[in-house]
View 1 (cartoon, protein in one colour):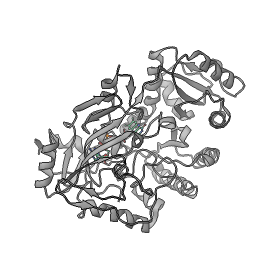
View 2 (cartoon, helix red, strand yellow):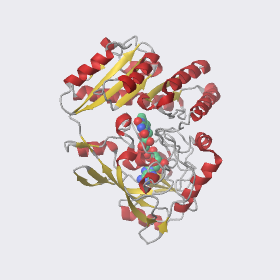
View 3 (cartoon, protein in one colour):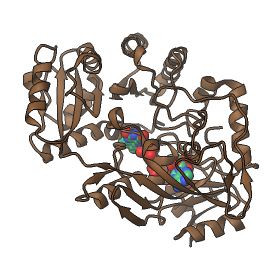
View 4 (cartoon, helix red, strand yellow):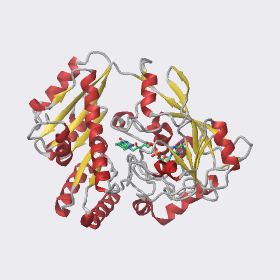
Length: 470
Ligand SMILES: Cc1cc2nc3c(=O)[nH]c(=O)nc-3n(C[C@H](O)[C@H](O)[C@H](O)COP(=O)(O)OP(=O)(O)OC[C@H]3O[C@@H](n4cnc5c(N)ncnc54)[C@H](O)[C@@H]3O)c2cc1C
């Protein structure tokens, strides 16, 4: 097992993609096997923060103190069978895609950051552009091998519900506490997942490393479509794009069944234009869509054109993928916007201030109008993009130093409105350390106490991932 004690070598582990810079740790351990990890946990008395790839946006892996346990060497693929893959938590999502290439199967969650580790993506229940149709990470987890902070381990499979206790390797048992808290119904990555009769694995997915360390994972895979039909539609007005999304969801012919509906507002396009000069000059909004196709794509493409023709869009100037290369380009284009904004934040020395909120479908147009109204009223610089199909946008505030209080007040007003609609303050990035004040507002004190009672049964001294979530 590698141990890092030098300050300069610890420094990279004190960051993630949020730019939060208040981390501190006495050393880093990098186990090479599950057994080494378990042995370390049994001998350790310190607090432990688990490090994935550090692409997280909420400072989840940034420790306030104590030891860092990096999962980077737990990156082996153990087994690929027909529709399952078993691997360590340190494998990158990109590597999973490469391993599955040519197998006839694919792993549908598609967080745009492919450098993330599998363990980190499970700890945050990551989702991505294709979540609109295929769901989030949670929907593809078949089995988890977990270790508690004291080194006890358990293998949890789908079908093992919280009505039966977990039995650990030393024979000890843990029962789920009796609590009233239930998770919201919209797309959600905030707080522990709690539903009646749920499987134990669901509790650990999205628990942000606060309950256990994920040592190994078995994923369910889906049959690879023959191709993904995709395009980027441009609009002269943002509202035209919102109306189209509503129409795709509500009145499109049955053969129009996209897996991705991703939004770019005028300020996102402004930034992308510097990199992609061919963007139509008049475009003030864009929609990336993708549909998985089995069989002949021609008739489906025709249906899309017939459907789009009478709608308000810059159809003649929009882009449609002709081949695999175009399709990859569209994904790069989608990924470019969070990257550009994160770079802009780094250049300005700004900690990321971006929303990750979602509501149920019924509030979609109200949500979009609300965002537009408040953002034009408050006049804080921003760019908005993201998973419009799931009513889930990322509003990235880009304030100068003087505008930070105004940006915070605007964010707060948005939180209050979304909570009025029983939405969530995090639909995919998790709470980490940066969104805790919003999470407190979302669930209230009584529910927070109930979540603490879950934490307590697995980690009585609150030594695992201190400062995250609760
Ligand atoms: C440009 C960009 C685009 C992004 N796009 C998306 C997107 O589309 N969708 C999305 O969901 N996210 C997105 N993200 C956020 C990020 O990629 C995800 O949150 C990702 O899942 C984090 O994985 P990681 O390995 O980097 O985790 P880290 O940042 O290292 O850690 C995240 C959390 O997981 C915990 N953790 C890590 N490994 C384990 C383990 N083995 N066991 C228990 N806990 C563990 C950590 O302690 C921490 O709390 C984006 C980020 C960037 C920079």
